[in-house]
Length: 627
Image 1 (cartoon, rainbow, N blue to C red):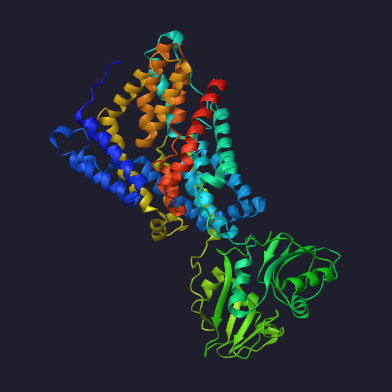
Image 2 (cartoon, rainbow, N blue to C red):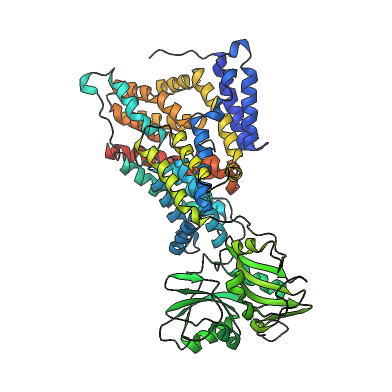
């Protein structure tokens, strides 16, 4: 192996690396702005006659058209398309049904699911698809998103080590081994790895990541902010108490088939028991818009707004069970889906002089009326601080009445422009889901996934195929697609790509590798393997993991042959270790979750530092046990 001489260009590249790390850690400027600054400095320096290999100014901005960046843009659009159909809502609801509102239960479910998915598709794609899911889980459970995003992101990276198609370095490895075999004698030629050859290593790494956050997450993750009560309906009850004096909460009760409540009319039950049955669950379906003159059928569950003592008396009277928290109604009462709205009856309204029951207000407008605020008085089925319960179902609407209703946000969106109401509530999600487009969304997602798994088509093109399909089928509009892209992530990655190329093109990477491997010359085989793993880890932080793999696999094979070790094992060590990218947010997944979760670089250093050591130790042990 010819020894390289340290040059002035290498010194400049090392200085740029140090400057970049300083900007990232100190956060003097935003991390995406720091990346742009590095790109500009690199471009200007490359005009110096002695630094021509630093960067090709004609290709300086090619990072914006790189496979990685285009893949991230496409996968964000695909994820937004799936989210728009409501699929991610259902995934979030399913996870919450299994994990409740417990961080200790939700974390491993999310992390494990993403880990499995990322073993068959690019880890950044799996992470991007689950960002909307953890956002909704955070909103519904009260768990801060920064307690969920990092475990999810880290396990997405770890999941890429479970199959030979889970990450780019592992995909490349067999090709690199075939090239290396050409220079090896017949007795030392390496066998290629099968699809699931690395599965034992990857599974243990994913489990390590899950248990790491379960055991140490309390200390290594950012301090959580205020966490709301685990009851999803708590926000509703707080609002009613604060604004209208309604001392009520949302409860879920089970109605057995032999309950005397069966056959009674919803409206009569509400009035007689000073509570409000706001939703029903019967034969697997929930309904917020059921007519109040309908009869109660059982076995079923009811979502009730009322005072706790009234609900307890109601449950005892009819032989019902009050659940400790919302279960089947979690989705219905999720703040992202529904909430409290205030509407005023204007002079031109056709509702004046008519009662809610007469209008079938629930069925016609999707409004579950909780109270009428009239002049300085609040009328409600539920007892208020100042007034007895009122049969608001038969109250005639008057001009200027303020209606306080629980409704789905999509219903409220449709009521905008309706002459019967003036909608006072403005801070609610006004984007309408498109569940009727779920078939198209799943079709084009499946097309993308199939192209990735079963063809040699470039990853970015596979994902763009799905994205364009969703746009053409109007799952998303083109403007919604633009809004779905996290441009700070795009600029961060695109601007750092030239720096990684400079590390490789100037020979800096190879020089560093030679110095470290020369230092390790003569050491035991296990220490040589550990040194190669550390080297691959370091390189993956400052350049692409593909570039690090291409550079280090031939060196690792040469070292193994000279030391009498297994060249295939040393090559696999490189390909696995280039996924050990947790300390700084230069990995695509880390860059993706940084903004939405509000992480700082120090958060990655704190949590990623321990994870990096665990990865090194566990991967080396498993590689030697399995191979």
